[in-house]
Length: 390
Image (tube, rainbow, N blue to C red; front, side, top):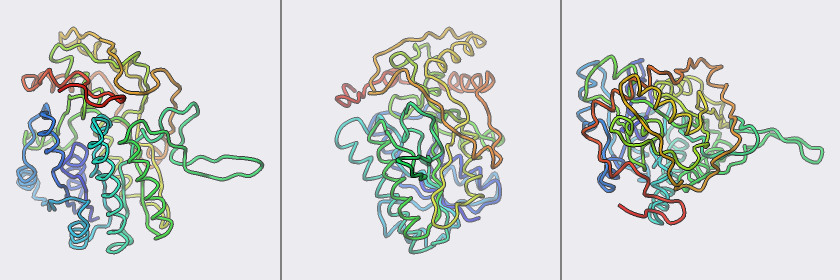
């Protein structure tokens, strides 16, 4: 198929672009490179050195003979977006092109507004571009498990059947987002569902859990640093397991927020790219938004920290756990059980969190540990007052 990846320069986006290109799809990337600008704004950078987009794509062509066109621009700029969609003519659009960090959205009013405008307007523009230029195109939207929050009942995949006063209906699962970022994703879900219903579009919303890992089959096979994926360790963009491994590698205590009982769904980056392929290959019916919960396992924050401590011992790392004041407003002990069978039914064969994966992550962290700035490890953004230092 012809697949356009919006946000294709990012952590999940570039890995997906290589994965789909290697498997024979005609892939194009659309990205404004704003993520690199935010790194500069916050004075942070990936643990792994990231080459320019042009250099990455040129190296991919040299190694595989496959070209990935690059449309540089902002999805919030509708004339640019619609022209790119018209020129490329996608069968599917994979949408990663959003500000994806809860802490970033909680820094202050400006960052909350930026997050919601960027995310909601960009998605609305995509819906209009699909309606006007390629109405049979399938939108694959990266959502988040954070839309659901932590309800005291099982989390279903997008929809829940309820019976009330003798009547029954299937409705969107209630949302309890935990940040302005997660709220933007809820707005997206509602807008996509509405657009599918009124314009007869088709969409898949992938409610992804917390992603970990750096390597996919492509980066391992190519063994080329130009293609290496980014690995964030700062409190704004770094996800918890990646952060713990990097903290352990540099001898910093693992920063467990509060009691550490916060439980979430997790997924390996290798499974992320496979899930995207499954979604692209299994489009929703016209007029429908189907929802898959894109996770493979559930862990508490403290469980992950303990796993990193144990894995570090084999490498001679004596990691310690430090419970720090939780900067977020969230339940630290709660029920959590999320359904995630639909992608498995469609062929996903998960990579479960293992000692070998942790060993690989720790070794990457050790290799690049001289690039770590300890000032960016501790949390500096609180949900109550925003950024408090730095």
